[in-house]
Length: 371
Length: 233
Ligand SMILES: [Zn+2]
Image (cartoon, rainbow over all chains, first blue to last red; front, side, top):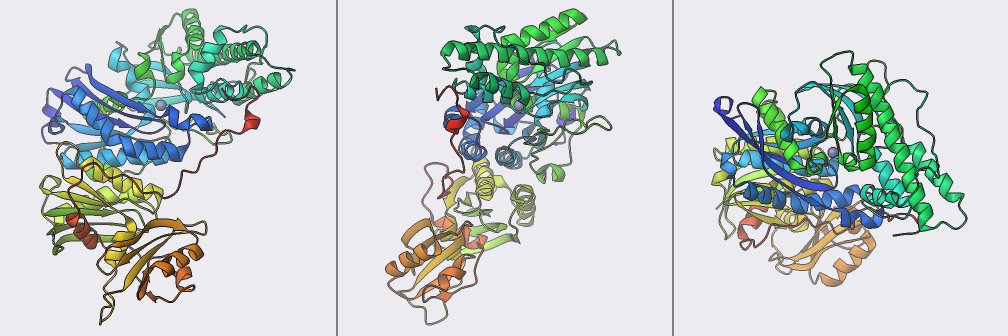
């Protein structure tokens, strides 16, 4: 950290995000009063490069990131109208995620920080999502966070910067992953979320009813792979599947997934409501864009007398601004590693935002825990 | 010109700050060579930070950064390139890419006297899965065969049919090739960052940032037909 950073009126931070299939950079200004101004948020998505494979291919993602990360950073800096020398820090996602991509973004971030003699801040991607709502919305701590994306499905109690408690996580697939796999199964293509949602609009959600996962299990964990399997079983039982069948299956799947997310969220709302300061549910991650999911969560919030807050979709999905913002919040609070530790920071495939509750297993599943 | 050389592509993490002329003269100000197969992402930045301090200079003062672009370990290649390319952002040093085989050939000491002027050097890197990365250079450093990936037998055949003089092999993949053809073997198996800096200084001014050289497609299987009950979109 520069010698003057702590007494500056405002902090300007560059953020770099390369943990999945978006190469993204953002620039934010944090005023002394804690207000956020997003100066730029630029992203290059790689969907077309992965389409033929029906999912994100780590090596293809890493190759794409190294070709683009400097280009995307420079675009963001130009769009923000900020000179590199005017930055207070460079923040970069250092995990969790696809380690080949994380390595590229974090390494580029270190180089930029060294070249311009400013701080490098390794950021937990999940913390980026957890705090992103405060960039654009007036939300005070504490709040309950539901993070639903292609890599994560978690309920997190957010008490403040760095003060998180994970209440539940998926024990198998992430919600976005379930959308992608089911869309693939139904021949809807990628990206699975929007394609499946579009197909479901023409479908009857009541024609197929899929069982609610973990209905008898206490706690706030999620399970989504069974739902995908149930769709497959129902599809395989059809003689000569039509587009209408696919639409009905999509609608049934989406309704069951939304209900499951809402049911587990209701439990978390109940748990944290013992502390009366909790009255807000924040939803983040790409699946927050799904209207059925939002409606189910809105109804859960209405029943509890809570407020549902969702940041604009472009800040819900992976973006560089949220990483910059997490960096700015940490820099303002002095909650940053030493310069040497930051430069030596290694990329982490797994990096829980908060330790799981005592005695609880870390989520399993074929691919292991996502975080 | 002041050059920072970076190699993270093979089985080492190495860097040097070198005062180099475009004619090939070099004066090394600080050099670190560390053998390691992984962990480049953790080591590189602290290593360069220490080198710059030792050389009493800064990134701002550099004219060029020379980086090995592969072929080699995919992750290592990307760490070097991501670092070097990002250094040039915002008016930093020009970034020059050098392939790992040329850098390896330049790192081998000249053959013992009398130096055969019609001699050739073939750097060979173990590419795993029963293959090697290889190339062939003449005594003046001109490429007779550009980098390629092949089985040791295929590589030996190509090298033998093109090298029109005494052949020297180097690199960690040279063993199986040395068994297949008559060649002198040099023990050099990692890049000398000072030799790399000399190559980077001698290169023409770059027009675009260097790209990685993988020589292999990514490991990726298309979605299986069995996964698609409703057929592909
Ligand atoms: Zn994310």
